[in-house]
Length: 120
Length: 113
Image 1 (cartoon, each protein chain N blue to C red):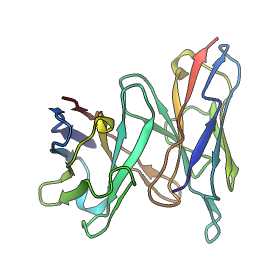
Image 2 (cartoon, helix red, strand yellow; image 1 turned 90 degrees about the vertical axis):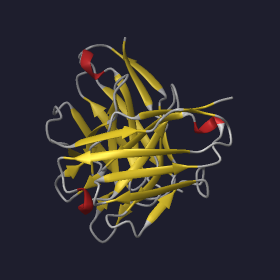
Image 3 (cartoon, helix red, strand yellow; image 1 turned 180 degrees about the vertical axis):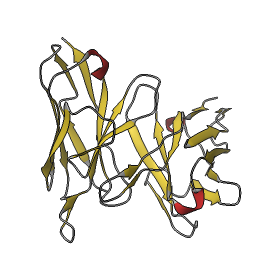
Image 4 (cartoon, chains in turn blue, purple; image 1 turned 135 degrees about the horizontal axis):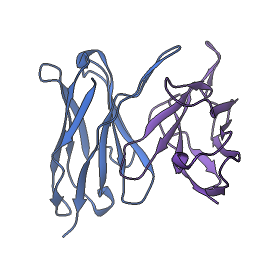
């Protein structure tokens, strides 16, 4: 069974930093691109970043570019999101996900999310 | 970035009636080399992560009831629930995976009338 378990969410002051983790199991983690999506309380889904299977390629939404860094440790089956210079508008549930689509099937899995609150 | 715009923002439909949600992309998400539209539809219920319903604009995910269907091409897409059930109350999102970042629509809330 595929499992994605996020952790690291917390209350942090504006300007602070936080590192989120996503522990993966039940699939060959090193074969898949991984993604972070966030959702502010009561708001919609916002795609923020992805990383390719070996970690050599990344992409970010403009809203987090230069402040957030996605990385992975394939030996530990873990995805990370380093978040710096946090702002109130970064308050959200952060989900990690697989989001793969093939010709006639998909490999779309989401964790339950971890809550980040940026407030003084 | 490709902007995905859904309409309406919310709708109330009677049980057993049809619900239709539209999604428009700011540029075509049809990849000419494989003739596939890089659009998916998600359902999200309160307190849960999103669940993929449809990919390639019209391919139903395994296990998804056949009352859910997707259509459209290029820049205009539709999710249809043919006969609304109580368990379909949720927020629905379209997403493009044609280019990075993979943007979502703003969501459409479906309720029972």
